[in-house]
Length: 261
Image (cartoon, rainbow, N blue to C red; front, side, top):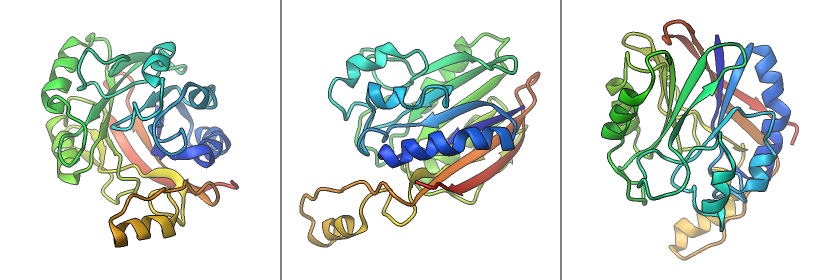
């Protein structure tokens, strides 16, 4: 079985690229299930119901991260979707859910867990290690395929989570940094890992934002509007191959494709 995981989607251009390229990638790599990290789909920061609906029929599950509440009213809109996740290690008083079990159209079930790192991340969150331990204990034994989106700043924290969960989950896939890393591998007992899947955003940009504006912010230290670049979009993703009966990963492959957007 093959699963497609798409890196952080940035803005309208990113959404267009996902709609254009994901159906092609699913056919090319025979992927029956697709997870999209979409915490930047609404004007480059946060999520919105209309943007999520833009990806209907393309993404089976949508994950997020520290920008999940950036858009006004999304704390109400998230409850409209059964397949949209916010970090599981947020307070239980926050709306939405941090993990779920989803039906794979090709057969079986897939548990998807969304976590937020604590190192260098502005939002307060509970310990992701303790949180994921508790979630794993609560999952039915019949659910073998488990995918973890580890949305974190520090590469070391993502790697630590990968090794912590090695042999316990199918894949630990890092997001947030918007730069695809070259460390895709299988960890002990067949757990797929990568520090960062990358992004769906402009190739000639700084993390999807206009170069000139970002450079000026660094040079001056002053508040600066950072427009999203909506052209020349590159889609970064990984394909995880796994055994449906055991949940063990057998391969992980980096993908990077240019869109016509």
